[in-house]
Image (cartoon, rainbow, N blue to C red; front, top):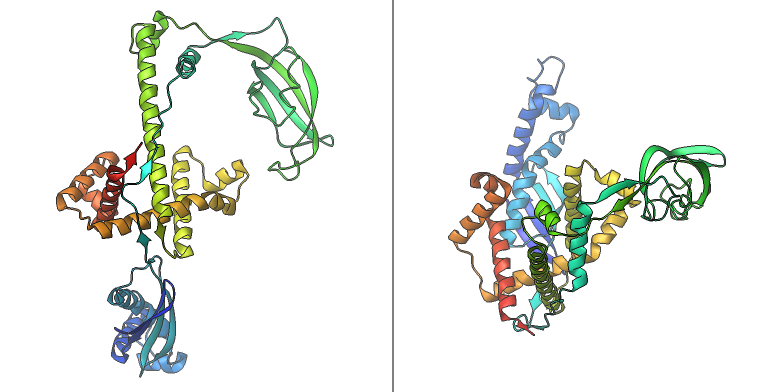
Length: 426
């Protein structure tokens, strides 16, 4: 392989001129021929025994060119990129500019590179830390959650349905007198006032009693995800099968003993308050960290290739797929449920992706400026933590995570600590 030139054609973009010698190309042609000949039949020769020159004469001199270039492609391009010293942010684009047995192969390798970054004033950043006080209302919300767990369900048979009741209904929807797909269910549990159905549906059940059958009239929203129903009037035939309501018990020592690790209401309330205060402290710390990071991004400059943002968005979409998978939900099904397309999903992630890319570049620059290094002990300790988290052997973890990438993450973490430690928190 011979890297003949490295040309900076625009910001963060280079063209590498790569030449593969005629000798190396000939060797690749021979390998391509040996690999392909078993499938080639030439009259007068047994299958797989036809000479290469005869095959090239019959099918053209370039019959093995593509296979030969494919054999050379990865090692030659990787070697050229390594020799150039460039740091790429995406796979290069490769074009064959010349090819022949006598001249070998010439390639043009277009590389998009990591941008040059400047970051300043990353030490001593001033931020305010505001910890929200825990109120009686906050404590009561937690108490109500405990009461909710101990709720009693009481059947209502002496009055009509009211907002806040739970009802069981059969229903079927009709548009222009014709039942439509997805508009029918039996024994459906519905909390009146929850907003689970389109506007007007739940409100018209209020006032009816268990055992009644009746119609309700609604109009689907203009933005409804099923186009055939968007903005259309519809009639639902309802059978109200039962009404029930929740009765929350009072908080007392007996409930506390039965539902928590505490003996008395006072002990339980004290624990609730302590945990809420701890949570408020963590939330304040998180807000401080966000403000510090925003300031770091504000103080950095770089011409960042769009592909870096696009790559991060694609990673975030993949992460979404991974989170959905354990629930048995595919990305396509998720988009159907939420009325989104892949473009709207990516658009929702765009701003967050830009911040993450900028912050990572800034932190990596701080690592360079501060000469932050990672010891072998720190690397092994991090591998151990990962093995514990994922319940895998360290050697298995090392098969999935490169030591070089892990060290970069550790170094970036040290840069974050440096920023926090030097910050002026008011």
